[in-house]
Every structure is written in structure tokens, then in C-alpha cells.
Length: 131
Image (cartoon, rainbow, N blue to C red; front, side, top):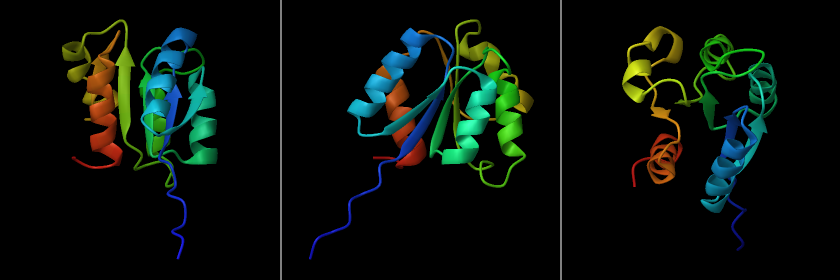
């Protein structure tokens, strides 16, 4: 008896720098994830509502809407409320965004450039479970 194909876990990357998107997308796809990308906050909300990803990686500062406001908007909707979010930022060190839990929640935060291996381990833990 054939087993049905395993559904790939879907990750949405919301980032306004094409190079960052490319690096993250390549690393995540190499790890077996399906990856969606958005270049601004409004597009991220639209894609999250349409595709309900298993995880979202959000840049803090983006056009149209900041990552913090994207997260707050997603938390207001039943379909996207429980999606884990990882924040990335060039402008803040991890310690500086650590104190802003109202906007950013209590999820993981990475300064940029981020350690891709550490980020991939965090992604695995959040949506697959501890190995």
C-alpha cells in the first residue's frame, strides 16, 4: 500500500531585500520546506490569509507596514492567530528587540545578518518539534 505524499511545511518570508529573501529561501527549500515570499507588510498579510503558512519569518522594517504591525494584524484573525513568527532586523540587535514583547510577541528574534544554521534549527523546533 502506497503512503500518501507528506505535505511540505510552508513558510512565508516577508522581507524587502531581495538578497536576504534569496538566501533564506534557498536555505529553507534545501531543508525541504515550501517557501512563499512577500516584499512588504500588506502582501505578507494577504499571503498569510490565502495560504496559512506553518511559520512566518518577518523583517521588522518593511514598506507598507512594519513587521510588528503585520504580526498584530495576523493575531486578530482566527486562521492566522497561532502561526509562529520569527523576526529579523538589521537595525536592532537581538537584545534591543527582546524588550518589545507587545509588538513582537515572545517568539525568536534574529539580528541581521543572521546565522542561517541557527535560524534553520529554530524553524525546525517551531514547526517540526525538537529533534
